[in-house]
Image (cartoon, rainbow, N blue to C red; front, side):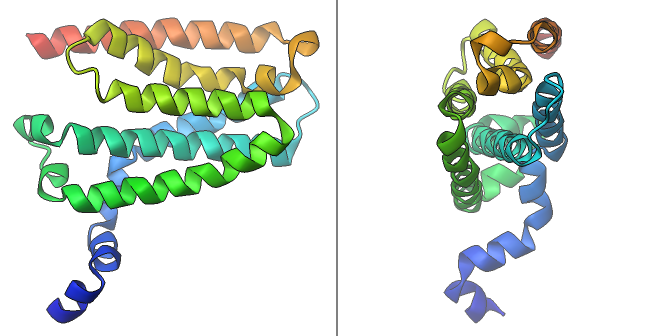
Length: 194
Protein backbone atom coordinates (compact mmCIF):
# COMPACT_ATOMS: atom_id res chain seq x y z
CA UNK A 1 0.00 0.00 0.00
CA UNK A 2 2.88 2.38 0.81
CA UNK A 3 4.31 1.91 -2.69
CA UNK A 4 0.99 2.77 -4.30
CA UNK A 5 0.59 5.81 -2.05
CA UNK A 6 3.97 7.06 -3.22
CA UNK A 7 2.92 6.60 -6.85
CA UNK A 8 -0.46 8.24 -6.54
CA UNK A 9 -0.24 10.44 -3.45
CA UNK A 10 -3.01 12.84 -4.34
CA UNK A 11 -5.55 10.14 -5.15
CA UNK A 12 -4.87 8.16 -1.97
CA UNK A 13 -4.59 11.33 0.09
CA UNK A 14 -7.99 12.47 -1.14
CA UNK A 15 -9.48 9.03 -0.54
CA UNK A 16 -8.01 8.53 2.93
CA UNK A 17 -8.89 12.04 4.08
CA UNK A 18 -12.23 12.45 2.29
CA UNK A 19 -14.15 13.20 5.50
CA UNK A 20 -11.71 15.91 6.62
CA UNK A 21 -11.58 17.40 3.12
CA UNK A 22 -15.37 17.46 2.91
CA UNK A 23 -15.56 19.15 6.31
CA UNK A 24 -13.06 21.78 5.11
CA UNK A 25 -15.62 22.86 2.49
CA UNK A 26 -18.32 23.51 5.14
CA UNK A 27 -21.08 21.62 3.25
CA UNK A 28 -23.83 23.29 5.28
CA UNK A 29 -22.63 26.72 4.15
CA UNK A 30 -22.49 25.52 0.54
CA UNK A 31 -26.04 24.17 0.84
CA UNK A 32 -27.21 27.50 2.32
CA UNK A 33 -25.65 29.44 -0.58
CA UNK A 34 -27.13 26.98 -3.10
CA UNK A 35 -30.64 27.40 -1.67
CA UNK A 36 -30.29 31.19 -1.39
CA UNK A 37 -29.37 31.41 -5.08
CA UNK A 38 -32.42 29.30 -6.01
CA UNK A 39 -34.61 31.50 -3.80
CA UNK A 40 -33.35 34.63 -5.53
CA UNK A 41 -34.53 33.29 -8.91
CA UNK A 42 -37.87 32.15 -7.49
CA UNK A 43 -38.86 35.74 -6.68
CA UNK A 44 -39.33 36.36 -10.40
CA UNK A 45 -42.02 33.73 -10.90
CA UNK A 46 -40.54 32.40 -14.12
CA UNK A 47 -37.81 30.19 -12.78
CA UNK A 48 -35.34 29.08 -15.48
CA UNK A 49 -34.40 25.83 -13.71
CA UNK A 50 -31.27 25.03 -15.69
CA UNK A 51 -29.82 28.50 -15.19
CA UNK A 52 -30.89 28.67 -11.55
CA UNK A 53 -29.35 25.29 -10.77
CA UNK A 54 -26.15 26.17 -12.64
CA UNK A 55 -25.80 29.47 -10.79
CA UNK A 56 -26.60 27.81 -7.47
CA UNK A 57 -24.06 25.06 -8.14
CA UNK A 58 -21.46 27.67 -9.04
CA UNK A 59 -22.08 29.58 -5.80
CA UNK A 60 -21.95 26.35 -3.77
CA UNK A 61 -18.61 25.39 -5.35
CA UNK A 62 -17.24 28.91 -4.93
CA UNK A 63 -18.27 28.79 -1.28
CA UNK A 64 -16.58 25.39 -0.82
CA UNK A 65 -13.46 26.76 -2.50
CA UNK A 66 -13.39 29.80 -0.22
CA UNK A 67 -13.81 27.66 2.90
CA UNK A 68 -11.09 25.20 1.90
CA UNK A 69 -8.69 28.02 1.03
CA UNK A 70 -9.38 29.72 4.34
CA UNK A 71 -8.58 26.49 6.19
CA UNK A 72 -5.35 26.23 4.20
CA UNK A 73 -4.41 29.85 4.91
CA UNK A 74 -5.30 29.68 8.62
CA UNK A 75 -3.72 26.27 9.25
CA UNK A 76 -1.05 27.56 11.65
CA UNK A 77 -3.49 29.74 13.57
CA UNK A 78 -6.22 27.08 13.72
CA UNK A 79 -3.91 24.59 15.41
CA UNK A 80 -4.27 26.73 18.57
CA UNK A 81 -8.01 25.97 18.42
CA UNK A 82 -7.37 22.23 18.15
CA UNK A 83 -7.99 22.07 14.38
CA UNK A 84 -5.00 20.08 13.15
CA UNK A 85 -6.01 18.61 9.78
CA UNK A 86 -4.92 21.58 7.66
CA UNK A 87 -1.69 21.98 9.60
CA UNK A 88 -0.71 18.33 9.10
CA UNK A 89 -1.92 18.10 5.46
CA UNK A 90 -1.25 21.47 3.80
CA UNK A 91 -0.28 20.09 0.37
CA UNK A 92 -3.31 17.79 0.27
CA UNK A 93 -5.66 20.62 1.28
CA UNK A 94 -4.13 22.97 -1.29
CA UNK A 95 -4.52 20.33 -4.02
CA UNK A 96 -8.12 19.81 -2.94
CA UNK A 97 -8.72 23.57 -3.08
CA UNK A 98 -7.36 23.62 -6.64
CA UNK A 99 -9.68 20.75 -7.56
CA UNK A 100 -12.77 22.45 -6.12
CA UNK A 101 -11.77 25.73 -7.77
CA UNK A 102 -11.42 23.95 -11.11
CA UNK A 103 -14.92 22.53 -10.70
CA UNK A 104 -16.27 26.00 -9.84
CA UNK A 105 -14.89 27.49 -13.05
CA UNK A 106 -16.98 25.14 -15.23
CA UNK A 107 -20.43 26.45 -14.23
CA UNK A 108 -19.03 29.99 -14.11
CA UNK A 109 -18.08 29.74 -17.79
CA UNK A 110 -21.55 28.39 -18.59
CA UNK A 111 -23.17 31.28 -16.70
CA UNK A 112 -21.00 33.79 -18.57
CA UNK A 113 -22.50 32.57 -21.86
CA UNK A 114 -26.00 33.41 -20.57
CA UNK A 115 -25.50 36.29 -18.14
CA UNK A 116 -22.24 38.17 -17.70
CA UNK A 117 -23.75 39.90 -14.65
CA UNK A 118 -24.48 36.56 -12.97
CA UNK A 119 -20.95 35.31 -13.61
CA UNK A 120 -19.56 38.63 -12.35
CA UNK A 121 -21.51 38.25 -9.10
CA UNK A 122 -20.01 34.77 -8.58
CA UNK A 123 -16.53 36.10 -9.35
CA UNK A 124 -16.95 39.01 -6.91
CA UNK A 125 -17.96 36.63 -4.12
CA UNK A 126 -15.00 34.38 -4.94
CA UNK A 127 -12.47 37.22 -4.93
CA UNK A 128 -13.89 38.67 -1.70
CA UNK A 129 -13.85 35.25 -0.06
CA UNK A 130 -10.22 34.61 -0.98
CA UNK A 131 -9.28 38.16 0.05
CA UNK A 132 -10.76 37.44 3.49
CA UNK A 133 -7.97 34.94 4.16
CA UNK A 134 -5.31 37.63 3.73
CA UNK A 135 -6.87 40.22 6.05
CA UNK A 136 -6.04 38.65 9.40
CA UNK A 137 -5.80 41.85 11.45
CA UNK A 138 -8.79 43.70 9.99
CA UNK A 139 -11.68 42.19 11.91
CA UNK A 140 -14.40 44.62 10.82
CA UNK A 141 -13.36 44.31 7.17
CA UNK A 142 -13.39 40.52 7.53
CA UNK A 143 -16.87 40.70 9.07
CA UNK A 144 -18.12 42.81 6.16
CA UNK A 145 -16.62 40.36 3.67
CA UNK A 146 -18.24 37.35 5.36
CA UNK A 147 -21.60 39.13 5.43
CA UNK A 148 -21.30 40.08 1.75
CA UNK A 149 -20.23 36.61 0.63
CA UNK A 150 -23.07 34.99 2.55
CA UNK A 151 -25.76 37.41 1.37
CA UNK A 152 -24.82 38.32 -2.23
CA UNK A 153 -26.33 35.10 -3.67
CA UNK A 154 -29.70 36.64 -2.78
CA UNK A 155 -29.11 38.99 -5.72
CA UNK A 156 -28.59 36.28 -8.37
CA UNK A 157 -32.05 36.83 -9.82
CA UNK A 158 -31.43 40.58 -9.96
CA UNK A 159 -28.14 40.03 -11.76
CA UNK A 160 -29.78 37.75 -14.32
CA UNK A 161 -32.98 39.67 -14.99
CA UNK A 162 -31.44 43.15 -14.90
CA UNK A 163 -32.70 46.62 -14.09
CA UNK A 164 -36.23 46.70 -15.51
CA UNK A 165 -37.27 43.57 -13.64
CA UNK A 166 -35.54 44.10 -10.28
CA UNK A 167 -37.60 42.56 -7.52
CA UNK A 168 -37.53 44.34 -4.16
CA UNK A 169 -37.91 41.05 -2.25
CA UNK A 170 -34.47 39.76 -3.23
CA UNK A 171 -32.92 43.12 -2.32
CA UNK A 172 -34.71 43.01 1.02
CA UNK A 173 -33.49 39.46 1.70
CA UNK A 174 -29.97 40.56 0.77
CA UNK A 175 -30.03 43.55 3.15
CA UNK A 176 -31.61 41.54 5.98
CA UNK A 177 -29.05 38.72 5.67
CA UNK A 178 -26.21 41.22 5.35
CA UNK A 179 -27.20 42.87 8.64
CA UNK A 180 -27.82 39.62 10.52
CA UNK A 181 -24.61 37.96 9.40
CA UNK A 182 -22.52 41.07 10.04
CA UNK A 183 -23.83 41.37 13.61
CA UNK A 184 -23.29 37.62 14.18
CA UNK A 185 -19.68 37.87 12.96
CA UNK A 186 -18.97 40.89 15.19
CA UNK A 187 -20.42 39.08 18.21
CA UNK A 188 -18.33 35.98 17.43
CA UNK A 189 -15.17 38.12 17.19
CA UNK A 190 -15.94 39.79 20.51
CA UNK A 191 -16.45 36.39 22.16
CA UNK A 192 -13.20 35.07 20.63
CA UNK A 193 -11.22 37.98 22.06
CA UNK A 194 -12.42 37.29 25.62
